[in-house]
Each structure stands twice: as C-alpha cells, then as structure tokens.
Length: 257
Image (cartoon, rainbow, N blue to C red):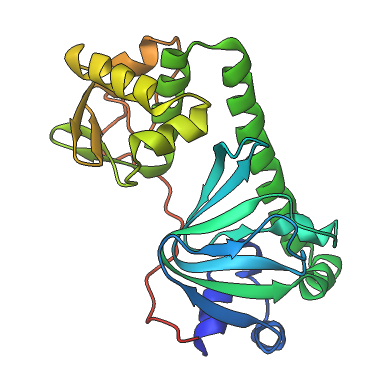
C-alpha cells in the first residue's frame, strides 16, 4: 500500500472503500509538505479540491478588512478541509496555515464528488463533517454575541479540553499549544484581555499555566462556573475505564514531496 493510499484509508469517509477504488483516487492525488507557519491556501485561491491532512496541524482563519485574524477551526491528522470546493468551484473564502510542519494531500473535487455519488458512506461522512463544523461555528458565534469575555474563554477551554484534553494527576492537560493571541483570535477578544482572564482563572484555582501549556485542575468546577457540562470522558464523575473516542489515525512514515 502506497503512503497516499495509507492516508486515504485512514480518513473516516474513505475507510470502507475497496482497495481498487482507493488506488484510483490515489493516482489523481498530489501530496505536499508545508513548513510551520506557511500558507496552504489563501482567500481568492482557486477551490480546485479537498485537502486531507496526513500529518501535522492546520488552522483555518478569516481576516477582517482591518487585517484582524479570527481562527475558525483547527484541523488534525486524518481530517478533510477545504470541503466547500465540492459545492462551489470558485474562489476560497478563508485562509489555511500550517501550525506545525504538515503533510497535505490534495484530492480533486471531481474525484470526491464521484465517490459521494457512488458510495453512501462517503456522502454521509462528508455531510457529517460539514454539519459538525457548522455546529461548532454557530455555537461559537452564539457565545460571541451573548457571553462575556470570561464566559467565552471558559467555553473555549472546555471545547479544547473535549478535543485535546488528557487526564493527568494534575488535572486535564491540553495537548494543543496555543498562545494568548491564538485564544484571543478564537473568541474575538484581545491578547491583553485573555492574559488577564487566564491569570484570574489560575488565581481562583481553575487552571495552571506554564509556557504554552495549560492544565485545567478541576474541569467539573470550571464547567459549573458557566453552567455548562464538562466533557463526559474527562469529568471526575466519569466511571473508571471510560475513555475518549480515538480518531484511529495512527502515525505513518513521513511522505516526500
């Protein structure tokens, strides 16, 4: 199995495809390595395909007319992004940047559309992906409109814990490393405000800060402070043995250009 086929096989919408179908798609794909902080695509670039993140991490952003950045989503290995090219072959609206050194596989839109027409599981998987991302963005927009800066930050920390949290002796540690500016760009605030709020939360015993490392010391108490429910797999009330769902995407050898 070639490396590109290996990556395709471990992307949820494609994992049940026959080997010959994967080989056909693989022959039409292109893979490329991106250094940290380099753009993967820009607004107004041609939306000519769907992208699969094979390794690394990518952030999806938009910019205001004044140049202020808003982070819309983080993409993890095994996930598709740029999927709106399936429905609009014009120009891209957002900006994608490699947060760390990343390998990306470009799948032509026509190939994904063909698979969606031929295989119900591919069509369902793509539909679920779009629905989940829309739900997350709508929830974040609701927080931006109706919540204080502190409430928006706490909800974001709970969301990050759900996706990237790992239970440790000290609490729930976030495996994703974000700067105060990154957090501000997500919740629509300023770096200074986020720094102040994180300091308050640390003084109140909700979390512990280190250099780009954040541990939520009591996730149940933090969630209760904004009348929210903690992620079930991280709650102190979770029965022993309960675990978060895995993406099932295992590390693979590095792919060349």
